[in-house]
Length: 295
Image 1 (cartoon, rainbow, N blue to C red):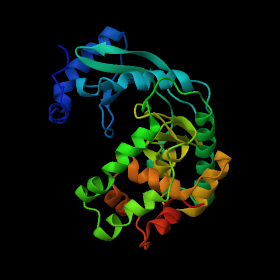
Image 2 (image 1 turned 180 degrees about the vertical axis):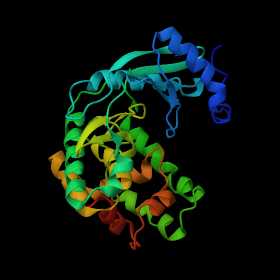
Image 3 (image 1 turned 180 degrees about the horizontal axis):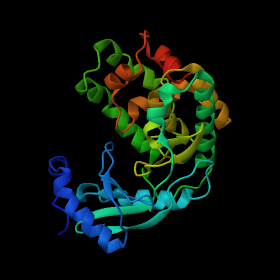
């Protein structure tokens, strides 16, 4: 049995594990891998541990174009970062869905470990993340979008206020967005290979050392500041010493105002959600940039 149809996002979101699992088992037989098959609880795409050595990531038809990104970036970064990344074993299409079979890395999710770390340990881990980002951004990107960064910025900017309004952003913030974006130039940056979602949920740690960075399917060629949206919101979360350590590990200054501009233009931008994740007493976007991303 192959996978059920999922050519639209609505079809995909209607599927549960029972609908997908027969296709997973058939795909494992096809790939010649065995062991207990366990779905990871989190993630926007179905991801399964297969025994203790393999991870199988699935891409329904509506996300089939993302297979090449995950495959090509995994190949590009293999052995070139100070943190392990999954070794690619196979990638392709099976039963109308895409798949990537990769190595399973060791360690616990940093999302689970972070609350138990003291201030020194948080700074140390954050510095390691910065070092990993410096190495990542030094790698020549494979063929990735967007094809025209300046056009991407113009398109995202054009719909920015409407998108944030639809997500429920308060009028006091909405009215500041046009002038703030006018004051930040993002059209001629150095473009780098950006993971775009380096957050605690995509990092593994063991005995205070990073042991894994994964989930490369949203990677882009982007302004380097675009990378620090996720680290500021979903890793250091406004903790200035941790963010300072991350920037120290990165080895170069990062402009908080440019990072906030990238936050507003991000393909998944949701400022009301971010304000709940990292609350602030700030009332101006300049203050918000310093609170979330300042070092």
